[in-house]
Length: 217
Image (cartoon, rainbow, N blue to C red):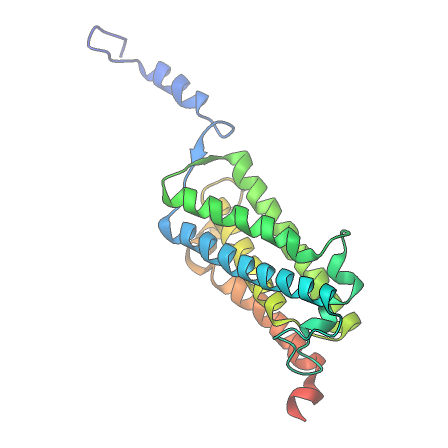
């Protein structure tokens, strides 16, 4: 078919137009459920970071201050806040969370409003959430085996970040942003929820076994 006065275009030209909107230039949106997931996990992480930051300021003003989530020798936010690991980048860790989780909320709200992003953006979100989980994993190890204490607000941030990572990865695999075989795309399409549940469950088992005598004593 050729171009006519009626505005028809040839199949070849239509192909060229589609090629202009290739992987590097095309945009991808997201479902409402996915957008709400980002808003929810971002909000959970932001609340945790906000509370920890406020308590950190109070602790700096009064070294004798006891945070509300310091419940016993194991669940002791105060011990976490006083540790060197709580400011690994030279400033309190939750200040990083205030920025990062705020960005996640903004992305989720934009998606609810119909925003669509390019492949590099989705890969960046995947990389950012991946860094967040790596950082959380390091903090989990430090908490369990070096500081010997747990922070409930930190745990909330861990759960939020882990959930975010797996669902962002699932979104990118299902939409072809991350290349994957059909079987893996199918798995993510049906069973994404299994991965954060399993991941968080493993952490729960580690916490349970680390202080088994305390929990059962």
